[in-house]
Image (cartoon, rainbow, N blue to C red):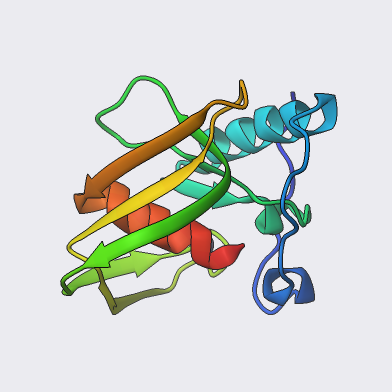
Length: 137
Ligand code: ZN
């Protein structure tokens, strides 16, 4: 478990495409643990693996109202509906916030840490976080 440095804009790793995880092995579990430590330390809502320099399709999300953080591996948005304006920031662009357009709700799928397929429908902050973090990948 370790707090990793967060790569900041315009670091090239943020523009590179993360690779699909073929097997959720020890290295992926360690990456997820380290990302959770890093997210907690930062006080942010979400973090994508690119932001800690790992080009793997892994994201972590901590909603303020939830006790347990979420970890999604190979996450994908499979449906999005509607449009809304939200204020958004990013741990890789510290001190900057912008109003951007996000979906009203999304359907997403991905694997959890036990390789189980998870499907979810999300709105509000969770939908925003899923779109933001999956964009990073
Ligand atoms: Zn971000």
